[in-house]
Amino acid sequence: MAKIDAQLGIRVTKDLKERLTAQAKGEMKSVSALVVQVVEAYLESMGNGRRE
Image 1 (cartoon, rainbow, N blue to C red):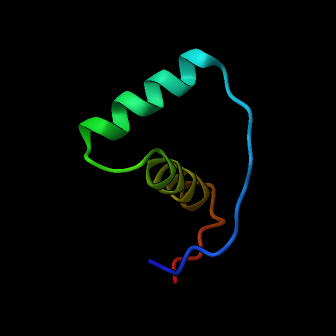
Image 2: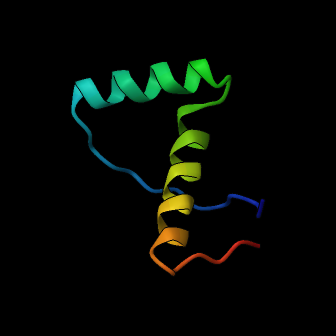
């Protein structure tokens, strides 16, 4: 995985944050790492993926 060196701030509902936190905890990773993984997978599925 490429070095992560930029920040992106987003607002989410409390429910979504709780669900993301629970999922990340279940996968033993940070919420940030989970979100990066999900966004990368989405972009790849849409034909706009660039893995480095």
